[in-house]
Image (tube, rainbow over all chains, first blue to last red; front, side):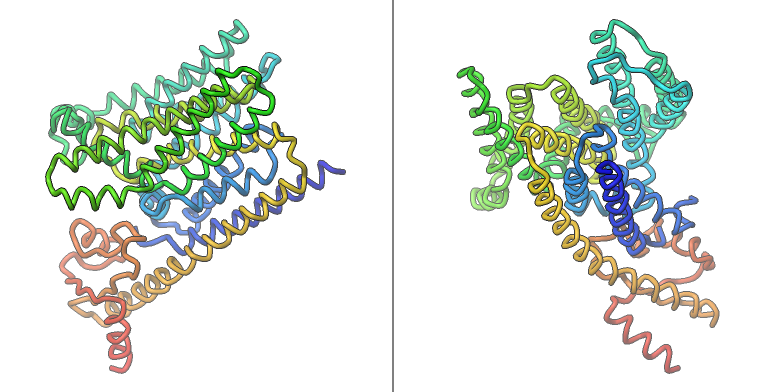
Length: 32
Length: 451
């Protein structure tokens, strides 16, 4: 139960961090 | 090429790389808490501006400098069990993956090729000393690295570099060893130390906490004294590096070339002593063998990656993404060790997670305000370039992006960028480009739309 809760937290953190990095990358991509 | 043209692919690659690097300490050591992931993510958001601009925003910089260090860290994650007490064992398909990782990681940058070679060889040696056994996984990786390195260095381009006929790249032999070593040492000092003081300050705090924790259990007075001396040197050198502006004013006030030389020598010495004090703190205060080996692996990797840069041209901020990534790995592993040694509870870890999440969000908002604005003008610029092409204009008016220092050559005002800009947007080679600042461009757009 604890492991599963930790995994959920880890996946959620991963999704949030990925979204932030992706948004930043989306804005900072230019013609070159 | 693919990454330049397909925006979504590049977004996925950049975001995936940063996510992998933030999670790498947790993948490297399964007992690492989420607070360390937040901590590493915060350190990546604290990446010095120039490194961020050249290694992540610039596609070419990203392609050359991020994948090789990512692959090296991935290999270290795969062979993390070499630090365990029991003999490592690997899944049957892992050696094939190890070979591929080793081969590909050597094909990008020379200093990282040398790092892959040294690291792969050292792992075989380390495992032999520990277990008196050689594993297929490590040998196959080393073979991949050797083949890749041979392919890399037998490339004709290196002949041109050695003969000094390459216009872009050169070695210290071309410009004189002493001149190159001196100028490159200044670049290393600036990019990895002077522009990176926030992360170094975080590292110093971790070292002080580690030393204090060690004091509780250590009864060896000589060791205790040596640890405090290391902390003193650490903070002293960090202070000297922090006071760079004061030294710059001193150089201006004295106004001769010797004062400038003395300042550089002082800073280089301070940087060297700072690094040495970190090594001493780890050697003196980390008592658990597994953690000691892991920390030494990350720590020693940093100078191994940086050292070849002393003599190889061109050198710039982008070269320092790989050592910065290794520094973050080191800081993450150190924080994990501190949490373990202090028997940190869940509440304290949650406190670290919340604080680091706040750092991440605040810097994220800062970056979004900068790059969001640049993005708006970039889209507007592209839209009006297309409109002018459709109307058959001979001279194309192009907007200069705001926050110039946050983009590496974002405006095609000089060659070859002008030519490449025309190629990218499918403009005729003869087309003339006229540049306006973003404020002038806004007025121009109003006039253009009203016509």
